[in-house]
Image (cartoon, rainbow, N blue to C red; front, side):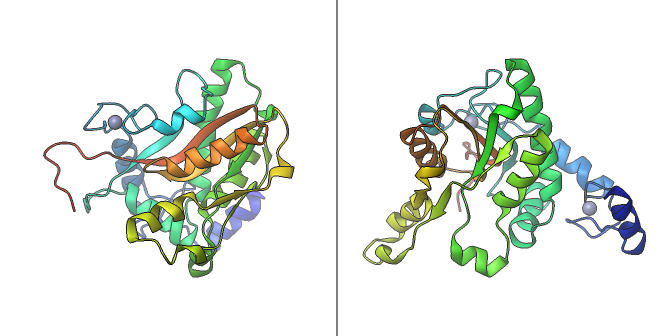
Length: 250
Ligand SMILES: [Zn+2]
Ligand SMILES: [Zn+2]
């Protein structure tokens, strides 16, 4: 497989998913990778923590109850909604969600973090199962990508975990009578679980691409526990950065 990749790269040199310059095997060029790494070290303007330790609005953690290595969840990077053109993280996530690019990159990064956390806690990845909250059918048809599935499969392979789809998005028809805010909330929470597939006492890494309000995580975790899961640990590519004072709203 690696030989095949090398040949492929010779014929079609990899281009950076963000800027189009020649990329290394991560899928990014040196400049963009460096920028991404720098953006990882930004702190939450409200609580001053890193993406995995930001406690702002992290009420979803009350419903997951599992921690690995002292943190309640794992989120790689910040997702910022203030439109700073200079940042690369948001552009990477855009490419992920719309073209399925960088799924390998994010899976490798998540796997690195999770291996460290599990080793600290003496957890064997083989005892865990990766599951994910799928994209809505409409979005999937529009883009041809379910980014969490793409990353989840690769993450499970890298960790040596199981991988199982346990959720479906429910149809949006009953949304007609809702106002815009309610509709958004409903869309986020419209998850159905494949209850028969839950292993009693099973340990689940619950993957979502971006944690914003945490509502999706909360709903999914509650459902997993309700149907017998033993542990649920939230994993995300990014956490939406809370807005601090001085940063204007849109
Ligand atoms: Zn680049
Ligand atoms: Zn925070």
